[in-house]
Image 1 (tube, rainbow, N blue to C red):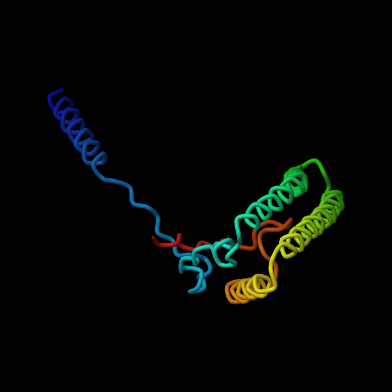
Image 2 (cartoon, helix red, strand yellow):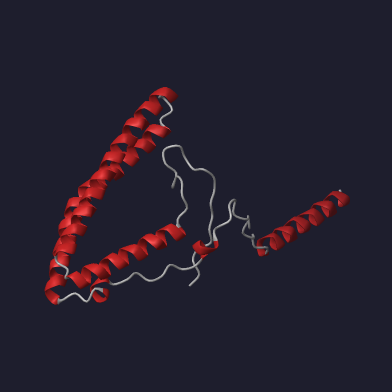
Length: 184
């Protein structure tokens, strides 16, 4: 009887002391290396966005016209972007639907992908139209500077973007790609 009580007290003390120490140990974050290494350029902070008004030296009238052109373009673009967003959500729903056969999923996804492609072409046309309207309010010197800015943007894009497919698309992720957040 005495041995049982002593064993119970000792085991109780051991359990309670173990629990006390367990609470003081803080879990460490799992440090897993990224599956793919990031290009060195991706770790750098992006350059600050240029201010077209300042760089092109727009007059107050031109600034007002440019603002109106942007707002008009935004109004045209918003429904197109909403349709694209809806189609992408629809594609996600189709992919997650377990009741459909793979063949039916592929057929629906192909149709949705085609619709999204048309919508993106429509969005590109709206952007091109806005750019032409904006260029129409510029002086020849400003147009030359604007072309220079666009060329710099193209060069920056080529330098910092890889060729090939981007994003997850409709087939899911192509593997984890974890880049560290930009340092401040």
